[in-house]
Image (cartoon, rainbow over all chains, first blue to last red):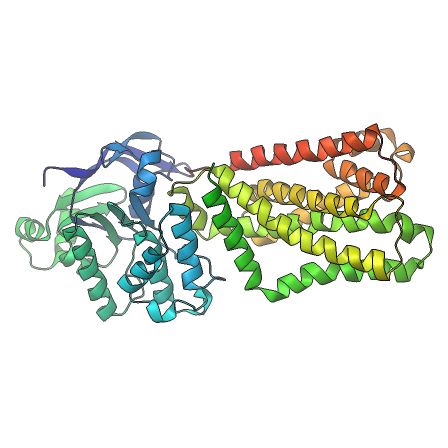
Amino acid sequence: MSDAAIRVQSLRVVRGGTPVLPGLDCEVPAGSVTGLLGPSGSGKSTLMRAVVGVQQVAAGSVEVLGLPAGSAPLRSRVGYMTQSPSVYGDLTVRENLEFFAAVLGEPRDDVMHVLAVVDLEEFADRVVNRLSGGQRNRVSLAAALLGRPELLVLDEPTVGLDPLLRRDLWALFHRLADGGATLLVSSHVMDEANRCDVLLLLRDGHLVAQATPDELRASTGTQDLDAAFLRLVEEQR
Amino acid sequence: MSTRVTLAFVRRILEQFRRDPRTIALILAVPCMLEFLLQQLFGRDSRVFQQVGAPLLGLFPFIAMFLITSITMLRERTSGTLERLMTMPLHKVDVLAGYAIAFAVAAVAQAALVSALAFGLLGLNVAGPTWVVVVLAVANAVLGTTLGLFVSAFAQTEFQAVQFMPAIVFPQILLCGLFVAQSEMATWLRVISYALPLTYAYDALARTAANTFDARFALDVVVIAACTVLFVVLGAATLRRRTD
């Protein structure tokens, strides 16, 4: 995994006068499902926003698929799912996806394809506001999948989903990675760390560790990733 | 600039309207009700109704579209959909053009209906052609839309956005010449009046009603068009790909 889909160097982001990311270095291997883990407020969303090019950056560089993050050619190659479902609540699932597909210049078949992928076909003509939180989240995920992007940046895609659906989605993420895509997936639930190829552990804007789950367990001498995270944080104090 | 993206926005906004029949009913019915009240209050053949009826009809779309646009755009900013769109291959102009066209379509329906009522049933008469009144009403709607897009950047909540109506629209209505002719205003008020776009929108409508298509009417039209372009440029400047 020498090829990096995302390369972050000395990234500094300041929001409202406080440095959220004081100077971050990390890499996301191409073709991997990389988990971005850490407690809420650790800078996960900010890092993801920087990767998709919507975050004002104070210093440092973010390179995505060999290009500066946010540059025009990347806009049809990167799919992004924000933390809160960023879809239009007053439209149906299908109308939402057809709108985003039209903006991306993707054919309508793609709408049916992503609906099937997130298992929402039977809700296609339901108004989004009438759906449950988890279903709304999946509409938002479906919109990110439009156009089969090479890089998917998913901010807490499994929040509020039942365990069965969560398992299905992680299986989907791996299928997409097997198909050549790179996924950066954030979560604050440690038990999801096990499902990732690579982990980036973030705390207070600092990278605590970048390793595979196995490496992490081996280096900390514990089977439990939650305990591993704790141990790493204690060590750094 | 891409027509595909612009049309996607037009379609989406009109679909949002269609899913909200109550808003459609309000957009269409409220100006009719107000025009009717004005006629009943002053009388069919009164000078007030005959003089104010047409300009009022042409200013409704400005007010309505300003308010609806600023709320729609604010929702786009706060719901994260704008952030998602900003990661997609589109130009800011596509967004602004899509909004302007969609709200112009809504304004055509609004202006056509209230015109049919006022000129047909309520007995409103203008010396100039009525279609010019309708065209000006739609132009004012586009002006209101572009102004709404611009000011939505300065509202963080829907409460604030709603307050922009009395803050930004009401002074323009008071000073546009509808209540007091500009020649009778205190100098400082007249100076402000000349700096406000609605003054020119009102004047164009009043001149159409009086059938005086002179150089001042031409200036009015030029100012309305120039302000629309100005607000599009300012609005584009507030649509930032990268935010804090």
